[in-house]
Amino acid sequence: MKIFHIFAPLTRYEFIMKTRKFGYYKETYSAQDMKKAREQLTAFGCDSITTDSVDHNVTRPNRKALMEKIKRGDTLVLYKFANAVRGLSQMSCLLEACRIRGIRVVSTDDHIDTADPVSEAWQSFIGSFPVDCRAGERAGKTVKTAISEFGAAKFASKSVRDQYVIDLYRENLPIEEIFEQAGITKSTFYRILRSNHIPRQRHGSIDPKGIDMEP
Image (cartoon, rainbow, N blue to C red; front, top):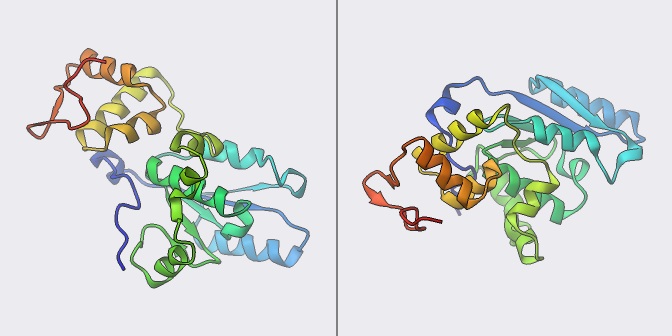
């Protein structure tokens, strides 16, 4: 079995940028377990390591702040999924949010890396729960809900956001995913294209989702 399109494709600009590695784990009452977590994340070469205390098992404020900070093309390095999220539903939402945002996810103790989707470990992992990353949607959650649970991309200014949207559009990212990733509405998307004189065509064909139509 082969699994494709784990990531939304990166723009050429994002591809050549130095990607950053952000480690995360939730503290537990086991000193040995916490030592192992920090050793694994350090060995992976994380640029920073974020933790949440045992008291914040439900709210995870530092994880939320991290997900708002991490950007497209970066790597989220977890100690293990069972530590980072609470249950399969949350894990599905995390994976879907990261897939849309173009964030690589690595779980060191689970030996999982979404950048290697055809690896035996990843196939076995996904195969263990066939609902995979769409489990949240089947439970009534949408992609928008998934992203809201784990933070959304932040932009320093509207001009930075607009250029980001244009780059994604030129790289043929599906329009619905541009909406979700940039946190914009359909009307805002059209306005960005108009104000920057971007043709409503990509590689010579009208977008099948109606990009040639006014909102």
